[in-house]
Length: 79
Length: 363
Ligand code: SF4
Image (cartoon, rainbow over all chains, first blue to last red; front, side, top):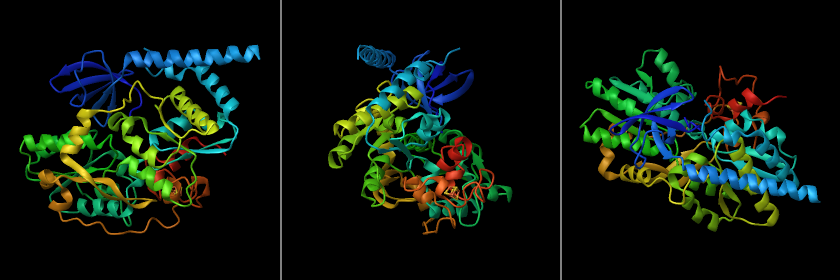
């Protein structure tokens, strides 16, 4: 029921939209998200988009993680 | 086409570094519970259990909606499906869950009108084209699902659909965490908190719980990097004696959560008591109808009262759901209980722990 992979909004008609995840298209309600736009990546649950993925945070989290781990690796070498 | 925000979080190199970090940090033996069924499946699918150091045991918790539905509720659903003029609509997982003496699937084979839907809105469509029938949606799930069902109730009202009603057997996660910690046999050192329930309720919803019952808690997403980051954060908290709430899934989970969804949920439902398989009655863990919407309450419309019913004989689902046993401790596992002939709900649901063991556990 919980689809873990974010889906891309490819069309919007009123409160409804179509999303695409890995080539599979589904109609979803957009009622629960603010200001849905074409191209947004959303988390879908039971036929509803429940969250718009925060693109900046997604990139930042990865970057921070990579930096932290790279730091540790360097640390290891110096030990 | 790469799957955005999934591929990056499946990065093998990153995962490997995280595992090394976990190995380096983890000294004490710890028992960590992933509360969400989608986590359980993802952990198995990506082989995460087998790559963690021996100090870490992962337990699966009461996070599969169908699994925690009480036997008495399942029996009531089956009873309702036998009523004349009723069309039952439900998510697929519930169909094969064995009740005390039947299942929805068996009832359908006998000719009852039971339909699988993908969204609660699909049930509204069925109600619209069948005005001479009563269409009932079986509302099972957590805070992620409940707002979608609230939205369908509000739509039904706006459309003046009087032949649509809902059974609200929804459950709330935070009161269940409290109940788990109050259960004597349960021994947990940290919680990996559900990603998508948290999308709705927000990180803030756990703050009171963590304050009252200090224990390391990390909200995590579902890709390997997300899960490993969550475990890493839990291990670090435990090793340094911290007992706090952290968010390892900030791209999806905010402090306040999805306010629109919360508003939908709170408009239609209010907190009430609920019975959980394996845990029993938990105060304030269910969602019952608000007075203004109680004419959509199928339990009122059809005068349903839940009866206590024993769980299937020999099925250890109840103990499996609270992390006291694993499916391997159940005498029926893979013998009389298989995905084709499930004895308990944990073997039915795609998010069920026994089904996950059956599919992925080797040895
Ligand atoms: S293996 Fe089957 S009988 Fe045993 S706990 Fe799991 S669902 Fe119940």
